[in-house]
Image 1 (cartoon, rainbow, N blue to C red):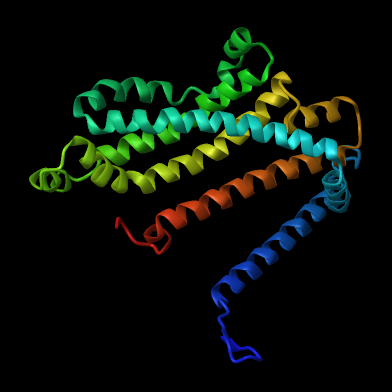
Image 2 (cartoon, helix red, strand yellow):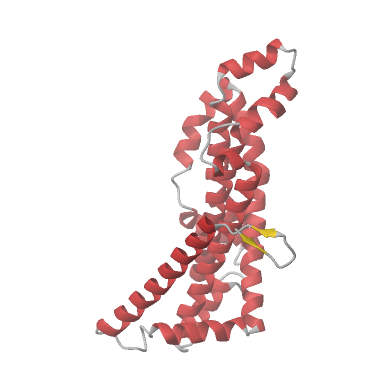
Length: 271
């Protein structure tokens, strides 16, 4: 804590400063490790460029408007897919979790479908939608819905019976119990499911662009750059950009989760 010239007190969060310093040290150490790997491995620089070359290519891409349009295309596919997953997954999860009968009926089929990877369904989606934005969007939605749907089901279904019965004893109806008991108790698990699903959605969006060449996103950019035989540093720089995009999404959703459920951030349990 320090005192400013006008007598106002400015609070310095030492814990946040320490976390930032540790993060910076980790980044520098990782870059140094990558540089050492490129120097020690007997691989041509044509296929494994050094770290500084990749960083220069990355900053060059940041000034390329075409690259930003590719990035926004991937974000559009990601946003549409995760939006569909949220819009369908949360209401369906609440419905199945709140009903013991529906929970028992659909638990088996859901657990059977969940392990099927989205990329395995690419041929089907291409046949139905062609190599279009819609194909990527629906593949992203399919792959990312499972963490949201299952976390919502388990979060609602695991609400303790005492809470439900207490609400009923106060004369609350089904809708009121759903809004005031089920959803607040399940919300932390639902938000965690959304955060996990967001990462999966980005992976699928980039993977689909890479494998089947849909759209004009960052995955298609990586594929086209590789096939054109351009500087591989640009390819690695685009991969770094995709990773940073995923990191930004995760940090943003983690902050949203901490803001909505502060007791989770503080290490507590349910409110």
